[in-house]
Length: 342
Ligand code: CP3
Image (cartoon, rainbow, N blue to C red):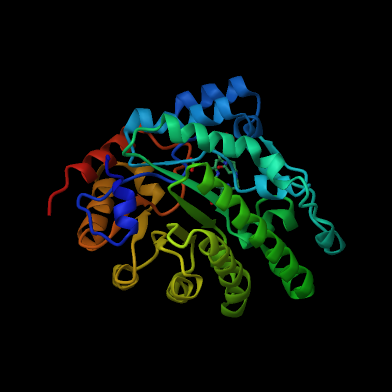
């Protein structure tokens, strides 16, 4: 059987050169993605049509031969499947009707899996179409990051509306996070059953919370997701990505039980190495180094290889690739990583 090196690293093996993939690797920096999006109609049409979703998932694999492929979808299909409205407007990102406190108990779980069945079909087809050595990653948003959009109705710079909602309506907030945690765990279990080798939980907005709120909104729901998945699949590899968690990365690692940690680019090497002693880490190139290219890119890549290359590492960005990134810079990054020697 062909080896999936991402899975070896997730088991704690140090592989050098490390495997590589990029968050948001299917996206607007690729002309072939732009073309598919235009044909599909809108972004959600891409997500819910397995023909398109499979095609755009495979685009970066064909072009770059990454070691992992991440299902093409969005974190907000989960609240959409619970009956909340969702739109994506060009240049504006996601738009939702803000959820009110009294609507939390009325979230409708009855059509959840039916709504998401095209996603499961996409995973099944990807399983068949991907090269045998390519790891297939499923994903969901962490409950906290998902609720920030459900509450504000759109992206905000600091998630003030969701923080305020939590302080003003602690019980409704807990209930909302718990519902999302249970649904998200079921969603990831279905992705695993459809053929995902590992899953990633994106908590892009972990970095805006005080310590007590981080514990309650980030750690508790993610620990619940991990526990629910492990009750069924004890060995399922789970990557947690609490972006911006800073010093709280350590307690997140201990209390959630995730297999591996996604690191953003602000994590110091000393902390990254001590986290790596407990399990694999993934990251953590500043996406702006990839936009800049040249010396900034080479130095950033080489620093990660030097500082984290001796332990279990999955090379990645510290957050998603941005649309203005030149493709030649992605090629340069891959070449640097794959030609590295200790
Ligand atoms: O990584 C991949 O290639 C898989 C697909 C993927 C998308 N979104 C596709 C997407 C994944 C894993 C996500 C996760 C996601 N979605 C997160 C967490 C990770 C992160 O980047 O912080 C969040 C917060 C969202 C919500 C979301 N979706 C926002 C805020 C936006 C607008 C910003 C933007 O980049 O446009 C989206 C839209 C989105 N999701 C696009 C893509 C390819 C762009 C849509 C388009 O084609 O216009």
